[in-house]
Image 1 (cartoon, rainbow, N blue to C red):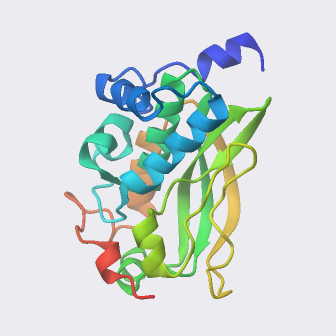
Image 2 (cartoon, rainbow, N blue to C red):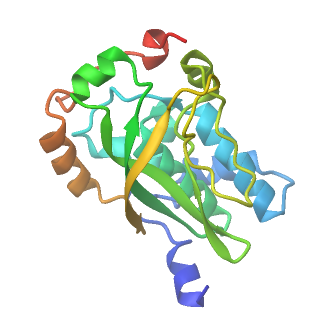
Length: 221
């Protein structure tokens, strides 16, 4: 990686706000005594995956939904916000990171979520790309462990050596997640674009204040 690219992707941004005091403190606390970047990345991934509860019913019109520090403070977030937090954690430690967006077909969403979205195609799913071992790796810290248990799918692991994208099948061999289109990766979350597009694509989901609720309570294995 060119030095200029390394500097860029380890720099703070508006939504990947790796210069926020709480983000810095948490990233350093989680990796205290750990110097290996691969192990740091793995620890931070699990912290975001399981420490931040997945919430698809938040306020998509609120810029804070997409900001790393706000997601950390709330303890909940949807895929893009969680991806931003993971990217921010990595940048704190000097690991280059960026936010990727892809369209996915989710076969195991709850009936309430499917009714609100109106389709099983979820546009602009957020994941994180981190630079380790001289290459970019994709990692999706979206679904927390307790939610995965209720959905009947194993939590998605990340070893810092290969991609960790949401599984194609659940634990019973049923179709779980299919990636339809990759829109690339970005230095920062394109929040204004996402607010506009989410409102256009999913008007029933994108209401002021959010729908509110708990996917975990709805999920039936």
